[in-house]
Image (cartoon, rainbow, N blue to C red; front, side):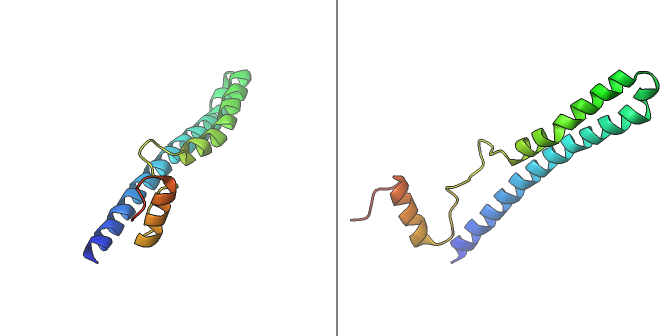
Length: 104
């Protein structure tokens, strides 16, 4: 039972790290979007309105890109092959996926 708890703790820490990385990337991109938008109309428009509009157009593209980047699966991220915690179910899915040979 202790090995099961340790495995669960390892999975939680892995998931926490993965989501922390995703949140950090998303917040950095959205922060950049806000900086572009606010600086375009607070400062840059005083010198050049076309440049301010261009900055806003770039800022407009950042939120969907940030959402795609924050939600993509990294090379080390698990997805469908996450263990469920039920050994019998995990063994069954591994057998279906061809990861292990069936028991005889």
